[in-house]
Image (cartoon, rainbow, N blue to C red; front, side, top):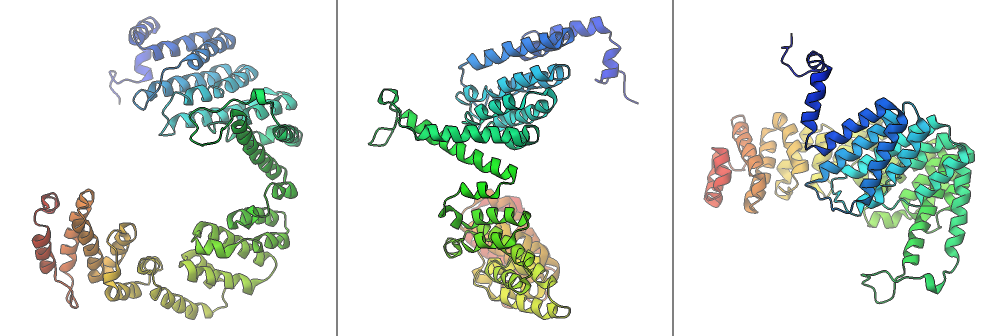
Length: 484
């Protein structure tokens, strides 16, 4: 049972309203944030309109402020913004969704003025605005605003999205806007695009200061460039939301469609629309050779998976299998090999698996080979690979070597020990002091593994390894202190 002195709501209630009120006055003295929160609660107790009035006053004050906010005092701004947003949604929104929606639009509009004077390297502040947009979306569904008005507000917001504060807006509001609202925004974006093409008056062209280019850069051109990108991205998203495949693909040039990742994005939508032939057409138009030369693995994987799905949908199963095997040989992808084996006739998968393991054993990149063999639990082959190509292991690639050593320690303590030694040697040879604590742990692991190794097969014993380290790196006391 909790003590009556424990700080909880029940125990505090026992103090009585008068005493609690006095305590709140005392605690809020000198604490501007606490006072603001108390005023909001008092206003909310009177009426939502009074709470809304308090919020408006505070939002205006925040917008007028020009004090720079660095990482040290950012928490005060964050707390203030969270308090105002919570008041809008939890106090005003419960009774007056329409006013709460108007205040949320006003709240997110603060983003430009805040980011102009705020260090948000952590992404905390933009996260608050994204949360506010999510609340705005919920409130819009409750407020029953005319579709045209909501669409116009959305259009204006998207055109003033300098810091990405409205990024979640359009897709989130799509169910509320419906087809009519989305088409309304689309029409306004097309009008905006046409206006951007019109030449501007010379008198309206102001040179952008601090421009490093030898030619003049005008603010009109900069704004037009930004709005043109907004128009393009919005039309793409609207076409996607409306299921307008022709409108979606029309937003990309022929050259852009050669990008494997973009070709895959387009093809995926045709697959959803049950048109695998059209999907395959876009996929086959991608410039795969260039992507392979540039080793764009992520683009190739998405393109490969989408093309496999298209071939499957068309019943071209052998070609799909060929693609799975080809991608495995290029990347040693475990999921693609597993899919390949699963699709083989019974009893053929065993021979194919052995072939795949032998292939991995011989690839040029020893780290990729080792990672695959360990992941596939082909421990005998992994052990053989380490013993055969020990000198090729790069001790700097600890992300791969550490888990491989852990997996091999039970099956092959010698192979695990050799891997650990490579990481220790690298860190000490290159003076990577930040890794010494890990090196010390690896050293003790090697010592433990040595007790179960009967034959070091020509490699140093642990005693010889430790002696060599002492001779070469005896002065690196921060390492040896950790070992001792």
